[in-house]
Length: 473
Image (tube, rainbow, N blue to C red; front, side, top):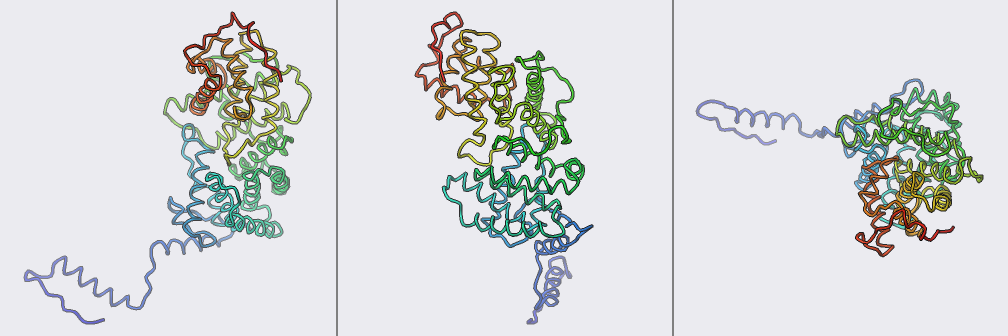
């Protein structure tokens, strides 16, 4: 380095001169050395952490800052892949734990990000899921080569892991769950069910779902959520027994005023479930409306799962016999299941996920309408709720034209000719305004347009219900 004289200020060496001197001294000391950035230094530290093991299990790597862009992954990621993963995690976090109801879930500090950093199999399966998710959002018809690469890597690594000493570790369980979710995204629930059976045996070897719930609640709840979703998609009973799984409706254990505590319907079991779900809906409306403390995300998840297991246990989707309460009770039970699906995240937006529920609810709702024709009492109000819940969840007007006619007919019998008046009646039943108001309004507007009648001339009441034509299956 060439010598350089630094001119001295007549008043002595001041602050600026001292900074220049220090700069020149350090240049001399650091000649020929590679400078390590702060970012790289942190990544190196995390690499050492990731290699630590305790009791045969890989210690999860802790993320020290709040952005995946500065995280060290098992393999080098390009900017596009990092962006895909970033979008998937933050999008799905808001879907799983809606910010209207739940306290912020710190996804960066969660088990799922830790598994990505510590486990290469989960890393690849998550990249396959995130790429598929974005492909579906962009309406791409084919599976991308990037997705196929990552899912093939994930399968190979999971097979290796399952034959090794850490076959029932948290990361192994998480990796198998992610493979099943990938199959859900690609509408292959039967394959997902195969993964679920393997997951069940892994958890049994680990000591059962009760023990996993104690050791890792988030992982146990994810396993149970996968179980109940696949049961509803395949029409099969849940693998985990509803009577032995350690979950409960933790957010509805205390009674609060709902405005309607009378039993609904003719089946006591279904009525009790309806009342519990009503209380849960009222709690969510209260939380979203008051703007106060939000709910714990895992308590929220556990409560949803508890209701779903009870509903599926009460009436399996593949049963063919009419329940004791008749078609009306069947329609109410299926509508409650459809209601609960509005609280589950949608991994794709290209078709109905719960086709069996859709078919059964369609048949039961039309039978129920025939039974309630000519009346405008409480059964008709319940039918109104059933039809609207069906229309904003698992049915749509494009594929179920009869739904428009039935809703229009029931609203006519009840003398309801505006969305505000309809929603006031729906609020007597489970109805979450933050989730259901907008799709419900759109459904009503589509019905009015499809019927070709303006709001101003919809004036049909209970006195002329005898002139209505009954709609047959």
